[in-house]
Amino acid sequence: MEKLHHELWIVQLANAIFGPVVASALKPLGVHFGPGDRVVPDYLVMVGLIVLFLATLSLVVRSRLSVENPGKLQIVLEDIVGGLNGMLEANVGPKGRAYLPIVGTIGLFILTANLMGLVPGLMAPTSNINVTLGCALTVWFYYHVQGVKEQGILSYLKHFAAPPGAPLFMAPIMLPIEIISHLSRVLSLSMRLFGNIFGEELVILILFSIVPFLAPLPMMFLAIITGTLQAFIFIMLTMIYLQGAVAAEHPEHGAHAH
Figure 1 (cartoon, helix red, strand yellow):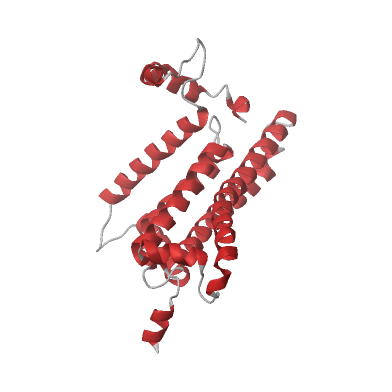
Figure 2 (spheres, one colour):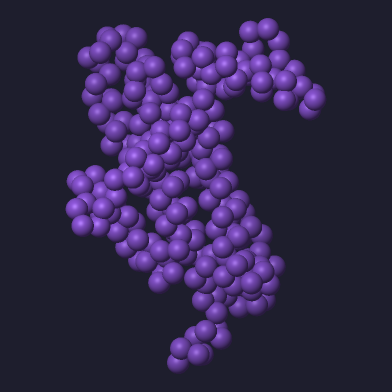
C-alpha cells in the first residue's frame, strides 16, 4: 500500500524537513538510509497530522466552552460524551466512566484516521498494519494493566487459570486456552481494521484510475459508513475487554452480596 502513496506531497515535505534529523538520530543505533530513501514513512506523517489536527481542535473547542451559553458544537460534543459514558456504564459497569479518556481518544483517532483517506492528497494511516497493530497493542496492554490495578496481580492472574464458574481441576486446560484467546485479540483488532480500510482505499484508487471523480463517489460514501462503523466496533470491543478485566466476579464478592 505504501507504494500507492509514494507521490504524496505532504510525505515528501515531511521527509525534506524532518528526514535528515531522524536519520542522524537513528544512525548511532545502526540504522542507515541511502540517498532518496524515505526516512519518515507515509503512515507516520498521517498520524502526525491527525495528532496536530485533534490537538488544535481540542484547544479551539476548549477556549469556547461555556456553561451559560453553549454553542452547537459544544452541545453535539456533550451528547457524544454522554453517549460514550452511557455505553461504558452499560458494558463495563458503574466505574466505566473512568475509562472514557482511553476509549474516547482511541475512538476519535481511529475515526479520523479511517476518513482521512477520503481527503485528496492524504491517505488513511489505518490502511497500514503498523498503525492498527499499535492501536490494538495499546488496548491490549491497557486493559491488562487496569485488570491488575482493580483486582491485584494474583487475583487477576488466577482468573486466567480458573475463570469464574470453572472447577479448579480444569486449570491446566483453561490456562493455555485463555492465553491464546487474549493473544488472538491483538490479531483480531488489528487485522479487522487494517483489512477493511486497506480494501476500501484500494478499490477507490482502482475506480479513480478508471473513471476519475465519478466512479469512486459511491465507494467513498460507503467508506464513510464503514469507516465510522469500524471505529465503533473497535471501541465496543475495547469496552468488552475492559469489562472482562476489571469486572470479573469472585466467589467472595458473591458471598458478601448475599
